[in-house]
Length: 161
Image 1 (cartoon, rainbow, N blue to C red):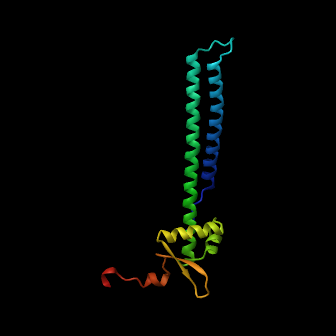
Image 2: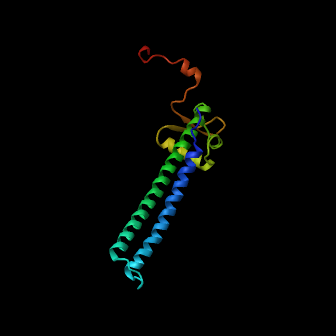
Image 3: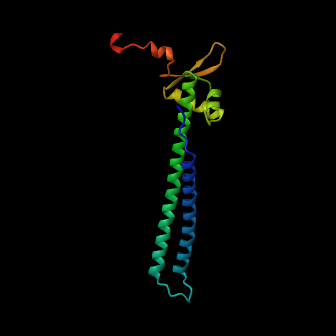
């Protein structure tokens, strides 16, 4: 099983995030101009207060929408990153037969050694894995549910036991 990583989708999500932030900044600037004209209009201008108030409302709405889109896209991007890291970690655990060290996880994923250890400890707290010690004194994490091929071949029907 390979990890589904779509760099094009990630690129467009980041691009949309940057565009949302840019639109928000530009809208905020126009909002200040409209507010300034509403408070102290220039003598030569013949723009009514209603039009300026409408422009102010429009640009503030666009600003709020841009801010919302920026944070929404960032949150979705972060969720995708977390899911990708989890798939990579579990794929590494599967390749290692269900027992891994933090170093093996760090090599097999995009995680740093510290992040790998933290994720493995989170799995232990959640009851998905347990911390074990080898005969040589090294700490490893054993995941429940990962079986080697021999164990799978020797599985019996639940009703036969």
